[in-house]
Image 1 (cartoon, rainbow, N blue to C red):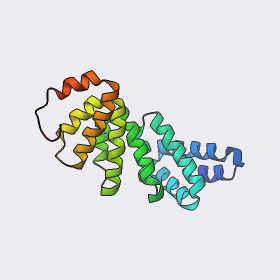
Image 2: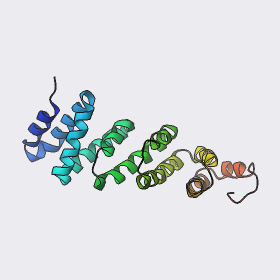
Image 3: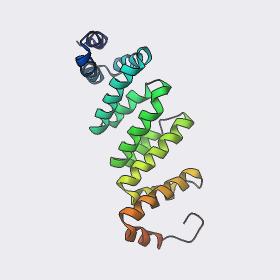
Image 4: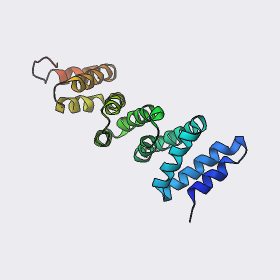
Length: 181
């Protein structure tokens, strides 16, 4: 059986040149076998040594996001102290929405902090617009009138006009007249 805390503690005693890679490896292994324990250890690292912990956990979040393992990256960010949470969660959701926007929208529902949720929503629509502004526009049409709908439509239009102006014009011509359009 793997003892994640012991592995991280050992990694922390290693020479500075190896410390971060070994700590990340220990946390990665722990995330596979004992995710709750790994999240506790990561949070402890962030609290006890914000610079080193931030470098390790931030690097892991980037690696998991690059591998499109957004759920694990989101768990790591969600367990982090407030100082780190908003930036990391926003970056995760931007990448998530660029590749799998419907999953990102569904995961957004699990964020209960209204301020964080709004910040993450803005990152989500930026990522989605970069990947598929047409589908973001279709999603925006389903939102109730308000700031989120307006922001999603504006972001979709900005990106769509650059990526496919003819497609955007054709879509606009299918819409009924109204203040949104």
